[in-house]
Image 1 (cartoon, rainbow, N blue to C red):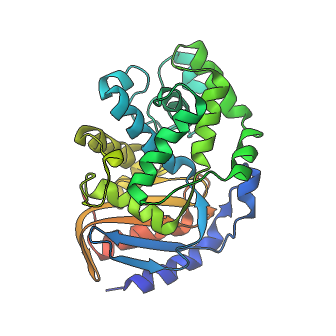
Image 2: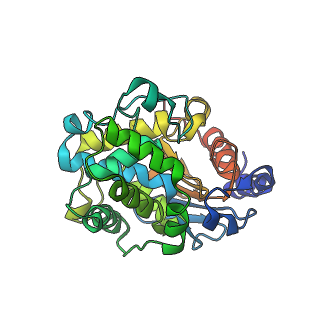
Image 3: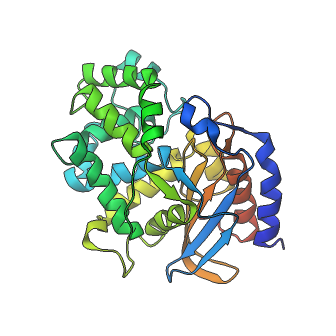
Length: 311
């Protein structure tokens, strides 16, 4: 049986098979050969591989958090009036179905759905909507988080495609705020700074269904919302590779083009850790779909070696 270190070292060599995201200029400066992993258990024990203190921005990983905050505020029934929970074979920034069918976004994990969710977050102002998500994250992580302004501005000034999506959403009646407000909230949330250890702790939240003695009231969520969030991660969380990832890895997971991935282990044993676990990975070298090449390789091998397949 391969050890964690063996899987990590093999995955590290895979980084050369991808490229750092360049369509967001501020992300292009990331090191393509970086790869780090954190595996965190409920008792706060943690296994670290690589530099787990390296900082990154959440990017699309934040979509699952935003969805939970909005759904807890409004109820699932209300959210479903604006965003569906169906997988789509289209790219994460696809605009085709919005324009041709005038339907609500397929799910909150694609950009159209995430922008819609951004407009539904609690609070009247842009600042309050962003704060609703950062406070929820801070309650999980037990520390303050901040937004990388350089990344945010880089995304905002290159957001023509997302702006087009937002205008179609507004025209079709699915946006509950002004276009620019929804867009700014969405992009600021994508630019939240975390570490790889933070990613593991976010994943652990889902693994424990939000039940951990150190969570404050601000981290509370209904079990229904958590379960729907995990189902969305399993079916839609890995961009256009979600089906293949579910079939061959079998864990709820969410990725971002920064190279971030969170993965949820409901109950297993990995070396010295046992029970529910959260896995955080950061490998800025991504594939054509938008997933970390080293991260996908690591989770695929890990699932097989430690029998983590949950379906």
